[in-house]
Length: 232
Image 1 (tube, helix red, strand yellow):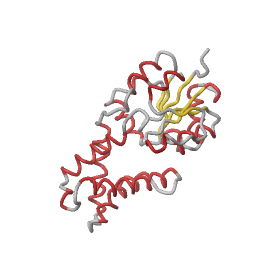
Image 2: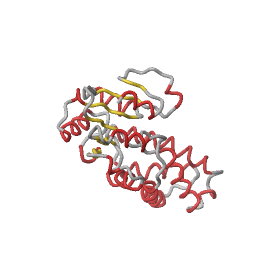
Image 3: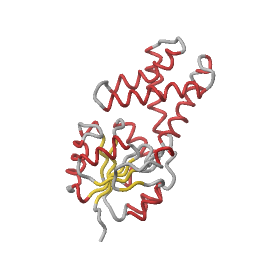
Image 4: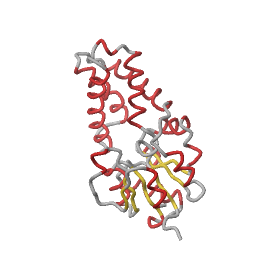
């Protein structure tokens, strides 16, 4: 008899390859906006952007900044480092990025095969901190949406991972108890700690190779999605 009756899954960098798709989208913008006039090359732009973006998402997760500020500031900052402190340009680029990003379709290896395996056996629920419209577009363009019974986003749940409230929202939506559920995700802070706080088992899937060697507290840890077949 299988242990779990419901599966909760993170979207970005668990199923949908956020890092690959973000680079593709930003490279499109770098070329279209001729940002090579300001940066030595794309990597110089991307590295400044990526560092600032991580800082902003951390602040957003703590409720310290708004969604709108995050969207604009992550582009204003790298431009300002090159002497171009243009809030309106940053806003335009931010809007372009959110339009282009969800059209990209690169998935984590074995993502589709895993969902084909899980779908007949479990109700599946996405739990994500991503923006509502963007996440739905991502799932539609990459043909993931049809696999899921529910899509729980922070905007609809009124809480961001790792707040247990977003997991409790998903539990109520499924009519499930914590003991019946497992959460799969790449973020130890958001996915794993959040699930722990909600009393839900966890499967930690760190994409960062340096983190794959660390044995952190969690129910299971995997290095590839293929390994889930043996667990589920």
